[in-house]
Length: 274
Length: 320
Image (cartoon, rainbow over all chains, first blue to last red; front, side):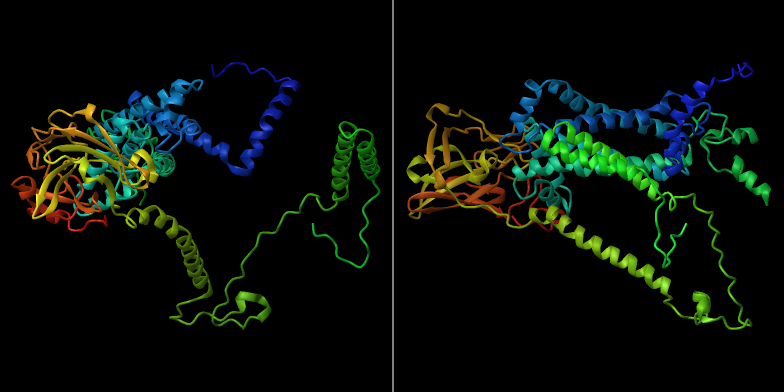
């Protein structure tokens, strides 16, 4: 419908559009944010991306759900050995919608970890960790470790028998690591014996320290995704993340992996330029 | 547009807005007396609106459209043959840096910015990191715990004894030991005090035998804390519910994943009361009761070897 007749806009309509555009233009002129968001959302991706490529943003969404529900749960939770369990009971049984938000946080934690692994499996099986994306793989693995640490520190917070003894075992497991293990265990406990400091320390790590690191690394992860482009599936006949396909389609069967082999697009074009 | 600095006073153009502003102020003053709820706020709104318009009108001249600024152009650096540059040309008048000169001013500023920034960052960060890390390793240790008079510990019987390591911390500091009075050894009372912390990963071991909860005794320890004594008959030793570690009644490992025997506590008798001392690690116990020969080691965490070649995996222990 590219040739559809455009109706002339009425003066009223033009004024309306100007009024809507004004604040957007104001923001764009001063920050470049609008263009940045547009660049991020409408950047080029290979034409044969598929649903597997959505696992990363699904993981991000799961993390944002954890952030939102966690922030609100923190308004009602009391990280004190004498009242932590009661405050969890209060959230679950008494507070309006408390059962729902706590349930979202509890089950969402598993969803987050599962999606992380699915995302990781996709990247591995598609070979998307290869040059030039190794650094993003490393960042992703670090995010996986931090996600597991979130699970470990969050597990203690209900402060029931399961939580307590699972944490005792978890900390002592860390303690059996050679050389620095005993020191690591004392660091996690905040001393030689588990106690009130352990709970407060786990709470702080769970909701401040580790999420801060995760946010920072997600920023780096996304930056690298945008900078390097999305990789095509291995069966793709296109080179990824650019219009290389228009220039040439490599025929060595590795074209989808965006490896800078002698045959792939930019290397050859660069050679021709000399 | 640069404001003019001259001898002549700079007068703003005529404006009607001050009248509105004055009316607003008057309205506030009247309103404060007549009706502070309605009239005074109306006056305030009038004064603010007209004040704003007045200020805008008065500064109109200064807020005109700025003239396009000529882009700054650097002068071409004079070559060695060129005539000397007058001093008022600024940097251009500076002599060329000597070859091998290592600290031009920009380099110095760069280094000092980074250095001072790093110093300030370190001064702020180090105490915070220190607060996170250091308290876990200092002022640790196990206080002596008064477990009450010796008469409560019937000779030859085991008692599940629970007490608080730090009564001020509440239930979270409650610990359990299995205590047996072995009678007199060379005229001194002898006790077997086994920690319930499993030597695998620290779960609480349970007696393999009846626990006579109906004969529970409660004793007052020091600082009014409650000591609970429950008689038990651990005929089959002790077992851990978490991963199935098994121990004989002396605490020797008999099956399962633990790497050594159960830890024990030192003890002493003061004024006829049993005082619990520091815990220590044990690899094995030969013999029984008061004749037991205990292979005693410095306290190590659960799952850590204290003998054999594996002990070299844990050369250092944080202070306990």
